[in-house]
Length: 317
Length: 299
Image (cartoon, rainbow over all chains, first blue to last red):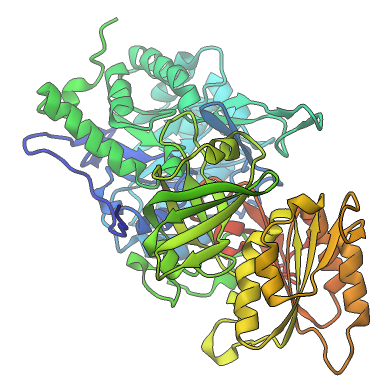
């Protein structure tokens, strides 16, 4: 029995190369956290060495503070969970004056997730963050299913997704990752549109729309009837979409959806992802990101894979 | 960095865990700890008590704080279970958790046997009287009323004992569905031989709501020996009603809120509570709040 208060670091066998390039973002290994599950890293800094991550992805930042939705905001479902947090965040000024200075004590590459109700809100955030040297890349969330006036429409229409991408692209030379929603008929169409509009990479998948009902009370279990499903339950959907998008575009992919172990992550790499995000698994295990890095490295060592890049797109169908 | 939490209306800084490399306060940051089940048995109807070996958590836990327990390493169970400390014994390295078998997670918990392993994050959050903790303003209640509805007794039992040990006179008001559901009666009676009991079915004590007894107690307490502290924990409707009774009486009152929670460390914003400072995280800013700072109409 142990009482272990160390900040966990990954175990990487000698001779295994884990570094990847995600659309110009240099990552020492292919693992980051999924935006919204990890804050800006502070809370998990008690459990892991944040500098061991391939990148740190910050929770969505909007121009002004967003209060998010009423409670209850989560519920557990078979092998997963639903959430309707509603992108609660304190806004870009607070992020720049409070979160970025804290992150200055770490060297880990920083991806900032950007959210908005309208095209101009995305560009407002990016213009502000362009003045901050601590920011290394953007992940533009055009896919959050939770905000009535926001992401959903943009992420489900190729022309609209392209317009947001183009507007952000015009403002920055930093790596621009566009995060796609799975709640569409053909995700490859959206991916092609944002690639043509200048995205350096796409990340997928955001949560899958779902619902939970309390039969006895005959009510929704959440404050919003339609919420986002995450966790191991959505992994097969995520793998399928990563594989489809990898066939449709030439830019690298950041894959996510239900990753808990290193082997889960390897499956995403084989499906065509260059890097992966760990989300809901952080709630199961606050060291999940580190365990996934160690798991990928162990897989490579066991399978004789010298460089993790050899795995990308390697699935035989 | 700015150490002042009050300038952020939506995401308050936790008192621990937000500091670079985890230092900064007298409180011990939560850690992940492997735990072993020492005993696990029903103590009152479907209310169970699990005793665990978890030395680090036991050594640092305060009344009102909680552990976030992972019952199964299987991936079909994604959420931990947040449970208040019913007891913590540093000398033995043990903690005790009181729980009611309600759903799949607690049913699984009731099936765990001596020697089985689990892990927990703890100790988490602000406990009772933590808000008045800075050394210059230590508040030592002289006469307290504790209001425990159902499983709300879990975080209050140790508080009752600690208050009594400082010479505080403690009245305890307990509500339960039925007499057999009243847990921890012996511990409470050691501190307060004259427990006030309300049951929903009238099987013991007052037949009706606990708030009736609270209201009686507050009405009969005398100016020369007034209550100066009230601690409330129970189902949300009971907490709302009890908070309304105590507000405006001049008694310093605190409430332990129960929210659905995912990360338990302050990152996911699942467990927010409406307060005069905006929506704040129950896990790290609570679970104990002062009654005055909760916006009860929005809860």
